[in-house]
Image 1 (cartoon, rainbow, N blue to C red):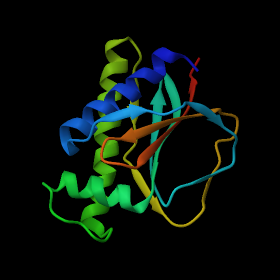
Image 2 (image 1 turned 30 degrees about the vertical axis):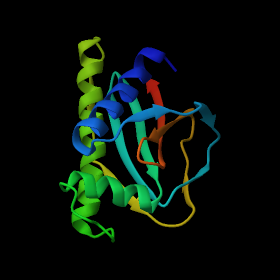
Image 3 (image 1 turned 180 degrees about the vertical axis):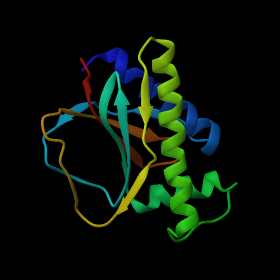
Length: 156
């Protein structure tokens, strides 16, 4: 995986989380995941098409999801993942990917993103056949983490 293709996702994650949720993000130890792998209880998936194809996943536990939804809803206390809070979490991922797509475009890499899909459940199994998945733990200043899983290939 090309670091020039990965850095925009990290930069966009930091920018959007700070802007919309007032949460600072530091990076944990980056590693490769072996497919299939288990994920946290809340996962947002966004597909990529164009010069790069694949998917980006944001995996988090329920307390982190509630925290992000609360921050995006102007600090309103969120205690359950209802349709409004799920929409806020999916929108945060959409904003990050839109931001990353702009950064990539400015570097000459044109991609399009799909609308986000949110999945919830215990022991969600993710499979990315024929693609390596790079996991970048995003450590939140408010506690908890989001695993940013990137599975990309360059289109020829």
